[in-house]
Image (tube, rainbow, N blue to C red; front, side, top):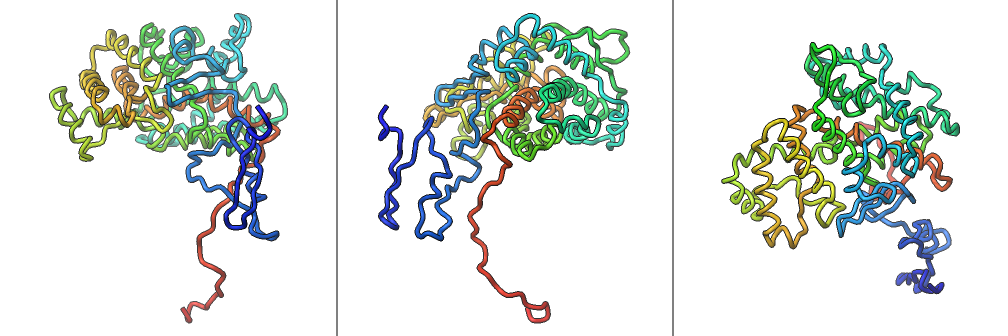
Length: 430
């Protein structure tokens, strides 16, 4: 490709001047716009992009998404293949290290995570201080942040071994904190980790164990939990991941950054979508009411949740996986009546020109909430489960950010549109 094809010519109609701006990987650098000025003392041109809808702030090798054709890949591997053949901890290793592990590497990785699932007893006492009806996600935000006080070496960001240990600890302890938050919210004693179980099986143990000496998870539900965690492990530069990177840009420890990311996920626009789908399906009430709901949605009188995505303009590849998973789960738990409503709703919507033209396809949240409900999770735990699955993605981006020499402390510009300079008046003169 010639040099002229690798540049963008910008003509400033205010001054008549033209500028050549390099184009790299389909983008221009925002700082190159600063040369476009009205005068020598002009600050230079800025780009204005609310919510960063068309701004890339990082060069990342972690996750690739092509929303137009419905592609999601972790480190180049299609999500469908990973969900079918891999385990959550293997996927976590892939996200963190960039390659799938060998047998020895995976064995060490699993061993290290399995043997760091316990939390300090003082942290358990900290959790005991929450009100009995505190939201589990609120408890998770606080306790993840509190981990930083137990591991002061986490601030040694330049030490590879220190970074490795914080990654291990956060992945290992997140299920423990999640399950303990749930048990506290319903007034049950905590169930401690069982190192004989898999990552997903151990989480189910800490959630549901009561009086039995040894909890034995159902293998189908155990695998379903693992797959759901894989599907949520990363999703590029979303709100919580961007928050993780922004906080870590100040060289904050990863626990504080992860607490911030968890807080971002707490917002219903990010981590509460599958709960909204459940409420919608319950409101529809029966298969017979689906057609009326679709008509109302097209008339703007009813909002269909779980359709469409800011990134995907095609069928969300995770939705296909989770739809198949739902039927396997219901073989164990019994059929959730909301599934019939969801299936009929999807069928009608995918055949309706209104939805097809607008590319409103089901996303991962459309079926995941139904599965979680069938497995016994209350809706208050849905964002907690999301955070538990997303922690390897957050940590992979945290590590990438720490090691990226181009990155600096995040400090966006603003377009000031407030009052001009004015003089202060004493209160009696106003």
